[in-house]
Every structure is written in C-alpha cells, then in structure tokens.
Length: 253
Image (cartoon, rainbow, N blue to C red):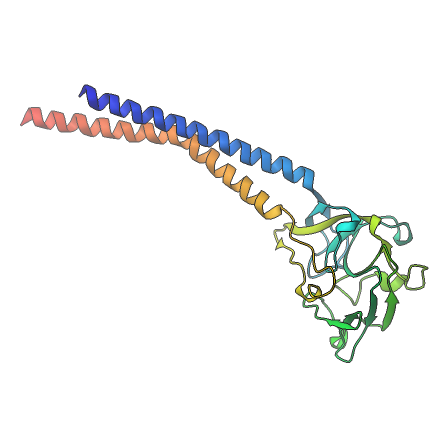
C-alpha cells in the first residue's frame, strides 16, 4: 500500500508540473499572439460597397501595416490621398509604375500591358465587361492604379483619369494591406492568381494565419492545463472510492 501511494503521489506531482507548464506556454502563445497582431495589424470598418463582394459596407477587416514599396498588383489596400478626399479608402491595386492599364479587350476584360486579366471577384460586370466605360492610362513611376471590385458603382482611378497622375495615387499613400474580413467572419482574402505571371508577382500572405493558430493553441493549452487538476482529483476520488468498496467487499466475504 505504501509503494502504491508513493507512485500515485509521483504521478500527481508530474501531472501538476505538466499542467502548470501547459498553462504557462498557453499564456505565452495567447498573449504573444495578441501582442504580435496588435503590432502587425489594424482594424478598419469598410465605409462603402465599392469593394463588394470581396468586402461589404460595415464589414470589419484586418489590414497589415506595410510600406508602399511592399504593394503588389492584386492587393486590396487601405490608403488616403488628398485628391480623393483625404479619407481612408479600400481599393484593389491593378497597376503599378510603368504599367499600361486599359479596358476593355474584345472579351470585356481589363488588360495590364496588353495582358488580359481574369477577375472572378468583380461584381456587377455590365454585359460581361470589367468596366462600364472604356479607359486607358499609363501609371507613372512610384504610383498605383486602383479599382473597386464593384465596377458599376465604385469611384476609383477611372474618375481621376484627367488628373496629372492619370488616376493613380503615390505608393506612400498606402497605410495597410487587407488580409481578412474579421466581422462578420469572411475568411482570408486571397491574392489573385491572374496577376502572378506579371513582373513582381503577387504579395505573400501576411502572418495572420499563424497568429490565429498561436492564439487558438494558447487558449486550448490554458484551458486544458487549468482543467487538469480538478479532473485528475475527481478521477482519483472515484478510484479511492472504488478501492474502499472493493476492500469492504473483501472483508465482508
């Protein structure tokens, strides 16, 4: 009986150590994930439906803080520019410095440097066209050409074609790149594969996915570690009760 008790005590001490370690690691992952996310990301509330159906008015999005030099074609960015009202806006980058943007080709598609771009995210294409009006622009160096996904109603670079920069905005106007719709949860925003073959390719995904894994994993470790002691004690009590019952039955027999 004495040996059994020492074994059980040893298992209990090991379990307590492991549960404490799980809680500690969980706290590091959970709090560290939130802290990293606070540094990397900013929340924005979408003001209009100009990016429908990718994001809708009232959606809460998470946008990674980046510099304008990190922007690639296909990115959905948050930017502000004095010529556009000096308010935060969300649009999709379809052209960078040196690009010739035109619409539409014989199939109604947008073209970049003569290459047709498939845009499955575009909503409300009138008659199968990527834009309700034809246009053409050459993007100056250091600038970005921006369109909304809701082409029939978005006020974007097409409205500013007569400006000196032919509707483009400086890269420095970009504050962040949208990675996901957080509320209501709409998931990660993919980088369009149609831009991948162009020089520079598309941007790599931000760290949001591993951050979510870290936070979720940390929460599970905290919960599991905290739940272990009372669960283990309840199991031990049941075993002791069963053992006493067996001993009482043996004495009675």
